[in-house]
Length: 103
Image (cartoon, rainbow, N blue to C red; front, side, top):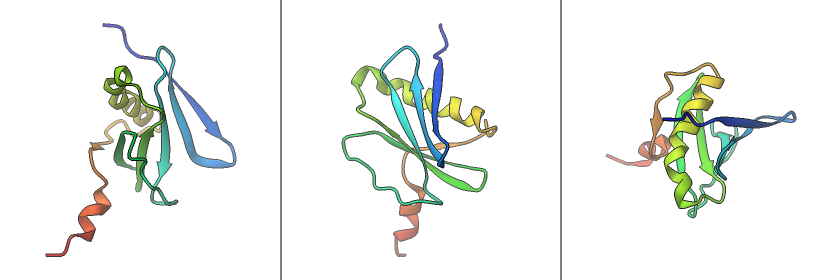
């Protein structure tokens, strides 16, 4: 099985505004540092979350195509290795939502 190859577009003015690009497909995933900035999920896209280096990250697809959905986790795992936090656990829901639940 061939391993996917990902590239990273960075913004020098926004250190946590990376975009992960698949070299072989149209997959693009935008990275947000939710700890440092506001994030409003787009209901038409896929969002996943993860903690790394004492920050909460949100990963959101850009114009996701059905064929690319399976590669989202691979892209995030690649990014985790890139930021030198390969043990990053990918979460399916925003963990901050649990804090809003009253017991």
